[in-house]
Image 1 (cartoon, helix red, strand yellow):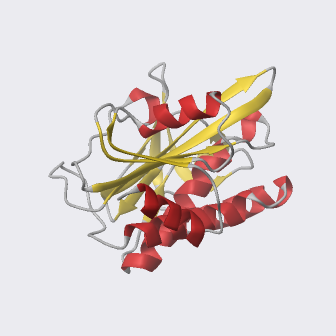
Image 2 (tube, helix red, strand yellow):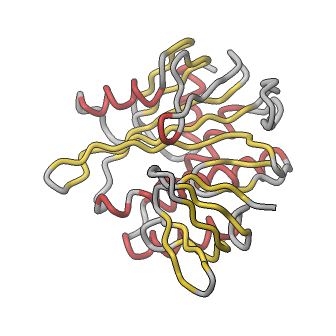
Length: 248
């Protein structure tokens, strides 16, 4: 991919913003965050052919095959409360599932909160990071990594080679349409769209908290803050930061 192709993806989505392409970078999220701190406007987008320090949720490592993944991060400056930022991760996941399914003909689903799945195999993920000061959101960076070529990593899948600007543009356009709705409509839109492509709802799951506590129940819904709602023996339990495992 090139800067010109990033610009093409933005144009497909009806966006006009600065782009930054690097063949190799530590992390597109880190670079996008630096640009956001420096005052970069909303929708500024960063892309890379390979990350040397890619990361996922809760500090996990994200590995990619050079040239075999679509890795991007873009800057947002939302007028959302800090406790509603989880919606942006779900909106990104739903938008990627919709765009990838339409573009490739594969069935791509969302595993709460940020994994993209083909069957039981992970094809990509989303990582949203933010800066909040005085209770106000200063900026959000939404990063994505999508496998296009087989990585050789156990449990992973790939979309196959496709028109990268068209795929990215489809994702950005779908995300933009949801993001630019009013806040109340955003909640309804995200919940409806993510639920429609969810691989988690209806499944029995185990939620592992950072303190080692474990909760098991059936995933029934997501709420207006992006939390996963479990039915635990008839009790409604909201899960926010736990690691989720699907039980079979």
